[in-house]
Each structure stands twice: as C-alpha cells, then as structure tokens.
Image 1 (spheres, rainbow, N blue to C red):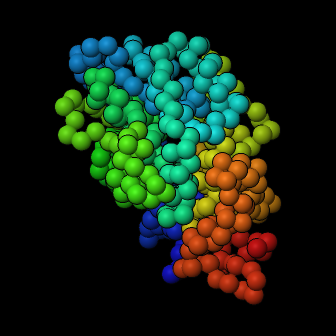
Image 2 (tube, helix red, strand yellow; image 1 turned 135 degrees about the vertical axis):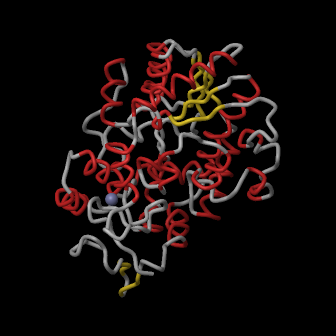
Length: 373
Ligand SMILES: [Zn+2]
C-alpha cells in the first residue's frame, strides 16, 4: 500500500478519517478551514439557543447530561452549559486506572462548578476481561472504555428522562472527517457505528469471549428502541473548539495539570485522567505508523502555534516514547507479563506499511528520513 502525508500538517492517510486531496491537504486541515471560514459561528450559536430551549421545555429534572472525565474539556462543557442556564448532571465512566490528578480534578470540578454527578464503576474484573479480549482480538485496549463512556450516558439519559447530552469536540471536525461529518452536530447510532472506536462491534459481540456474559456487559449496552427522545450533540459543532482556550477557561476555575508532566503527545494538559489511555494511543504506531505527537502537533500547526518543519524536528527529537509505566501497570492489572503485551502488539503491526529489514522493522517512505528505528 502506498500512503502519503498531508503537506500542511504531519498526518498520514493511514490514520482513520484522514483523506488527502489532490492539493495534498488532509481532511483534518480542511476541517480547520471549515472552522475558520466556512462555518457561520453566529448562526451556530443561535442554533444552540434552540437546542437549549428544546431541552428546557422537555426536561422534568436535569436539562442535560454532560459526559465528563474531569479533564479540561469536561470543565469547559459544564461551564458552557451553565452559561446557558442548563441544569447539568455530570456522568463519568470510572476508569479502573484513574490517576491521582484525574481524581483531584474530578472532585474539584464537582465542587467548584457545583454539579450533581454520577461516578459509574463497572466491576474491575469485567473491565479486565473485556480489555484483554479487545486487545487480543482487535488490538484496541480502549474499546471497552469507548463503549462504556458512550453507552452509560446515553442509557442514563433515556432512563432518567434527560432530554439532552452535550458531548465535547466533534472529532471529525478536529481530527479528520468527510465534508458531511465535519459539519454535523449529532452523535447518534450511525456516528457510533463508524467513529466510536468500537470496531463495528456492540456489547453482544463480546459475549462468550474471556467468559464474558450478557449480564457482565450490561453497562456497555445501548438502549434498544428508546421510549424517550434524547438529543445528543457535540458542543464543538456550535462553538469553535480550541483545546488551548478550553484549558485556560478550565484552569481559571480550578482545573489542575502539571506543565512538565507530559503523558502523551505534546500536550501536558491532555490524557491525564487515566493510566491506560497512553496504550490506546501507543498501538497506533503499529497500526498507522503514527505517535500521539502526530495528532497533537498537527493541531498546533493548524492553530499557527508551530510550523510543519518544527513539528517534524520535535517528533524526531522525541523519537518513539514507550509508556513503560503504563504498560507495566496494564500487565499487572491483567496478570500477564510484558512479553504478552508486546506479542499482541506485534500481531497488529500493519504489514502494508511496515517492512522487516534484518531484525528491524521500518516504514519505507516515513516522513522523517533519518528516524532511529
Ligand atoms: Zn493536514
């Protein structure tokens, strides 16, 4: 397979959602152009007024659910909802590997922003077996996480009669999606099927694997034929999303992060809630030939914070950073040795882009010529 890189940012078209057009520009960069010039944000803000009015009219208790991790975007989403007078119920899927700073931010968020909140825990043993199955079968440690964090708020909204769910950014607008997806505001069943990181599976697909029963997977199920209409939208479709601005807004109200402790990519303020998120990003090296830096630095290039040249130099200097501590923690959680982790990772190496050269694996045509393989 031949693959190519965007001429403006550093993303290759091996990344899901990234298509590079005739001018050599990727869907992520086109999304940024949409944000800057195509989308009429005033009209979008007006449209949000109507979303709010509809929620208020149909609400019998909470106006909206905001799915939250405690991270910067969670804070921003709640602050925005409260600006519009919405009564918020925060809902969290509790990761089995929450970080200390993640817990502190979540506690602070509930306190400082004054919201009601549900911290939804799934049996750690079920999480463990589901993660193992997902990693071994499809190479996605983050699949159970994504299924839970979408299914739990959606099901609770139906059951608790909460008419609106406010998600954060529209990933297809921020990270690459087609013309229609970029302009959409809806997170619905169709979106989940394609973009939910669920590999075209649902909870039922996993019954019987690693001894998982239907009952074990109850929390991961989406409501079938819901008897209440929940509007489920991306806040980032109504207000121009900017991770750096969101961080400032969140930090002004109490969100904390360490400037020096970078978990993944080039952002110290992102992916800090959970010890296992780094694995989800790490495996993309095998599958798509990218590190998290490719994603975060591409966003910075679009924002004009860095240049393509500087980004490539930074990626080269950092090299492949292996999240050793998190891998160790994940293997301990699984009761497996690190060898197991590496063997499974190897199984998902994308042979369309990776070629073996003696003992080394390399990617011919990699964007950095003198990369240390
Ligand atoms: Zn691009």
